[in-house]
Amino acid sequence: VQLQASGGGLVQAGDSLRLSCVASGRTFITYDLAWFRQAPGKEREFVAAINYRGGSTFYSDSVKGRFTISRDKPKNTVYLQMNSLKSEDTAVYYCTADPPPYHSNYSSLLKYFYWGQGTEVTVSS
Image 1 (tube, rainbow, N blue to C red):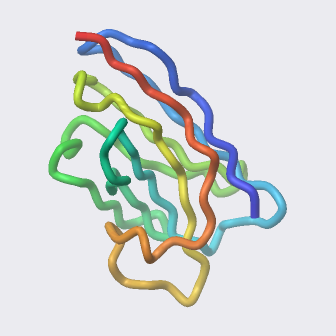
Image 2 (image 1 turned 90 degrees about the vertical axis):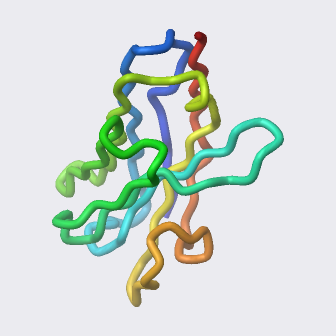
């Protein structure tokens, strides 16, 4: 599976962006999906996840209420809608996928097997 993330860019605080991640090579219809981010000089951190059914979503406290994760199974795509962006959201955003059998901790890096190359988001204040 190859994951291709896109949609990053330079925006101002308060703006919105929608990130997309398309899978190729294999459908990830049965995979749990997530977004992580890594700011300069910091460790990669969990942002949001969605289970393979699409019925359950999970968010870090820092983005809850501002970001929304969703998936389009026919398009083999996962999205991250980011609203009310803040300067602290500046980071490289990575999409990732966990094939079955699933690991339970959605916010753990260790759960996920496939990783995309990242798309950079810069929020100016």
